[in-house]
Image 1 (cartoon, one colour):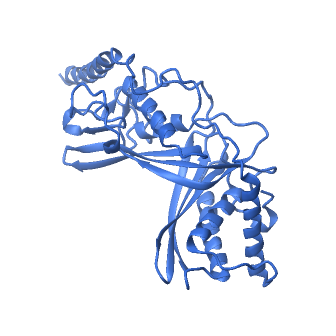
Image 2: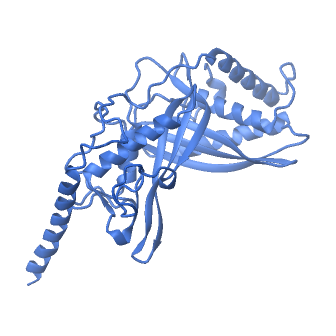
Image 3: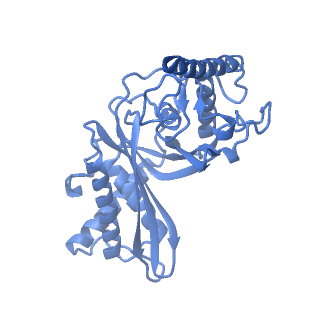
Length: 355
C-alpha cells in the first residue's frame, strides 16, 4: 500500500511538470517582448574615449595617498569633497585589483558601510587615506573568505549614501568572480533545456527531477546573463560604476493574456504561491532570461558598458502563501584598458598600480 501511494505521488509530480511544460511549449515561439535571434553577448566593452585622462586622475590620487602616508607635501592639492572621494576610492580599487573582462559563472558578494569625517564640506587627507585603507581591507577580507582557486575581483562599487556637516557615509559592494564556465555557448533566447525545471528561490534546486540544491532559478538566470567571452591579451577595469535596481513591479508584461494569474504577469518572475507557481519550467526560464537581457540593454547609460547583474530571490511569505519574486542590481561602468594584470588584494598596493 505504501509503495502504491508513493507511486501515485511521483506520478502526480511528473504529470504536473510535464503538463506545465507542454502547455508552455505553444507559447515558446511568441517571445514578443524580446529579441529572439540576438546572438550577441551583453558584455561587449568599448574602451572609454577619456581613458587616458581617467588614468591620470587615478595616478594623481595614488600620489596624494602616498604623500600623505610618507609625510610629503609636494603633491598636495585642495581637499576632496565627499563625492570626489567616492570616485577616487572606487576608481583606484578597481584599477589596482579588479578585472572587468574575466570569464566566470558565479559571483561572491560582500557589502559593508563606513563613515569618514567631513569638515567644511571636504575630507582631510589623513581621513582620506584612512577611508581608502578601510575599503582596501574590506576587499582583502572578502577575497580571503572566498574559498576557490580560480577567483578574481570583478568590480568594487563605492557609493556615497549619506552626507552631513561632519560625516560622510559610504556603502561598498565588492564582487569576486569564481568558477570559469566549462562551456561558453552562443547567446540566444533559448538557453535552457528540458531538464531546467527550477524552484523560484531559497536554493531549493531543481523541481520535478530533483538535484541542484544550493542554487535556484534566480542563480541560474544570473549565471547565464553574466556569461562572457574572455578577451585575449587585455585587462579592463571599470570606473564611474553605477547600479540600476530592477523589480517586477517596474516591468509589467504588456502582452499578458490573463491578468494577475501569477504567470508572466511581469517581465521578471513574480507570483503568489497560492497559485502553485513555485516551479519555473524551461520555457518560462527562457522567457524571463530574454526579457531581463532586454531590460539590461535598455537601462544601459550612455557611454558605459554592462558589467554584471546580481539577481536574487525575495519573498513576503506568510504560512503556505505569500508573494515570491526576483529582484536585481545591474552594474554598468566606463571601461578602461590597462597594460598590466591586476594585483591580488592580499598584496600591498605599493607593489602594484601600473594602471
